[in-house]
Length: 412
Image 1 (cartoon, rainbow, N blue to C red):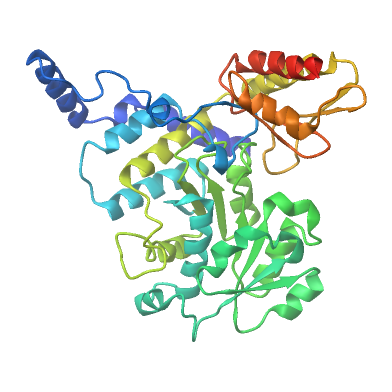
Image 2 (image 1 turned 60 degrees about the horizontal axis):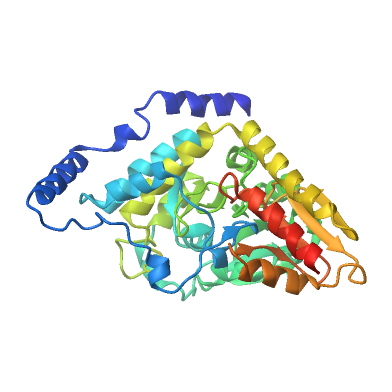
């Protein structure tokens, strides 16, 4: 794994990193802007607008994590610069996907890759690619699966709402619990075996056995790792384990565009998956368009993520979560627990609990006061506890959160 990381980082240092991807069009745009400025005409964007304020929306400190409802993550400037660059030129969309797919495959040491419309979109086009291959008549036929293999076998503990991405193709979900049941369920209509990494511990069949069963029966295997970065090793792990297809969300830990994702794995399946995506029109994934700006943004976000000092970043998160934990625990009747989820959202996290006889506030009211206060702070949790993470915070915000958490608990 370390050799793979070194290979990726060596490749990164061999390219003109972010500045080098910007071409003459940026210089032209700058020159045009200066010309307009000299002519005393207003320049679009010259005065920053507070769009959210104009719309009457409150922004907040994200102490919850990479939730879609909270708009995921914040992109680094290099990513938004790449997105802005993408808006300055026309380019052939298929050719861009080809080149970026090769670049991502090189970075992640896998056979092939493509930027998808989130992990959900990656699941849909990945399965569609498996079902139809390179037959364009079959591509246009979906979601009518007549004459196609149309069953996906899933462990019952993994069959959560996101399997809707699979049935979007017209496929049927077949739920099983044991390896014996899985083998019995395989038939001439079986298109794929699908695995949810976040629920690894809740299923009886583990990675290696799942992949082995797929190979034994010549059925492709797909693993959904949407929220499973960090650790960075996961970007390499599952293709090396032998999964035919792997997907990740782009706008979570990698901090790319919120509506982008990654589909990694076997070239033959990914090339087939691409037949369902724009610019082609008569397909089930026409609405899952990934524009040129997002494709570039996702590529640069991945480059940045691989080049990051992950050990240093982890230590920062540990220090931040301990600061908030110590502040909350200093209130009489309050207990805290620092933990790291084993799979999805694998980052230092905090549970805050208290005896309501001593601290007279419910967890729901606690979260409401944090949300309604100044600044607004979003957290997670349930009736028993308030949950906090710091990995989506800007540096320094952990101190604000620590102070506000203590204030609310003490005032109760």
